[in-house]
Image (cartoon, rainbow, N blue to C red; front, side, top):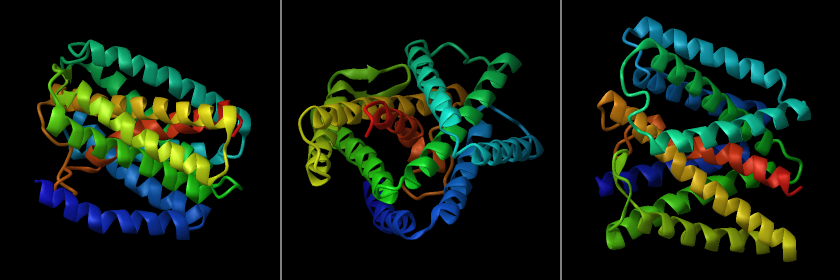
Length: 273
């Protein structure tokens, strides 16, 4: 499994980096949108929607949400309002993770909540990536930074958890995750945050604020991972799909980013960076 994960990463990471750096705003938005529509297909199975027709309808409705968001991507008030709403949504998700029995029964009110949650999470992630990529101050570099921040955190958590993991983080949601893994994620991402901050010339209070934003982003990225684990546990599956060898489905690969990207954009706007 680890060998498959490494081989997949060696293929996918360069492709992602090239796409972020070389694609213009519109092609980038389309490529990210396509990836998130795959994630929406997988999310529809976790709701769960039973028929392919219902799942395709869910993907079509997600596409409509992305198209609507595209029309408002340049309106600061709309973007900022959505980011505030997304922050509140993820704070609510944190509460849900501590109460994993909530929503476990397959009844229509639970399915409606999970469906709406998917719409909002996928749309906010897409909009945050598009807005971040379009920043005039090297937007693609900001996108690469948040990707590497989450990748570093995931790797730090994985190896620290394997080496030192003793205390379970959320045993009823994801038994393999540990507090030692969280510490590993924070340490590795802290080093990256300091390095990038110095690279772009941040100093003093701005540097400290930026590093704090990065640490909070990493904590929310862990919440994104746990939320997907909770949905999979409710549905009784190990992976959201089998699209990527060693990584499962698209959701399994981007679950941390679903929380991290909007929170990071919210944070750097909050500190006026």
